[in-house]
Length: 128
Image (cartoon, rainbow, N blue to C red; front, side):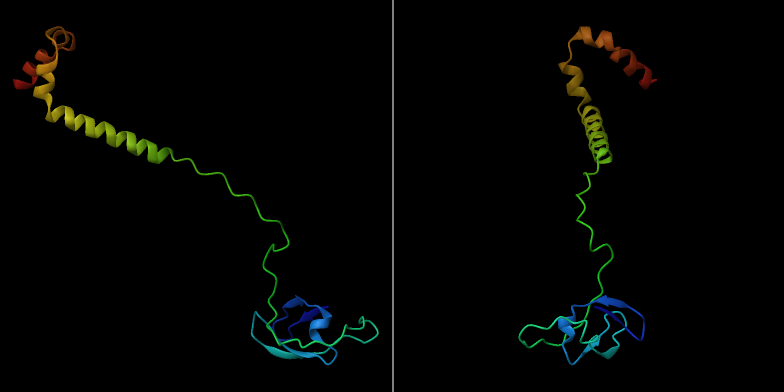
């Protein structure tokens, strides 16, 4: 059975047995309007099972796409930006450490490496 709010026109699918043979007061979930909903013609209604107490309730409209199956979780986003930031930070830390301990590093290098790297030439260039 379909119930339509007379105030805002919202439509709800409702079990006819929930309305009952005498009708029921229902409330629209969209505009909170209350009205008395009458049952449909008795000829079209299937005879109800033994009467049971049915409490009054608020009819909620179905949510958008509620009949569709749940979507699969999206793939994880790549973290290239995070990895690039970590690598850049490591390079900066290494450069600062090399500058801070340059004397110890130069003392530990063999003389052949000093000539190959032109370290003495660079040192003399920057002292002028």
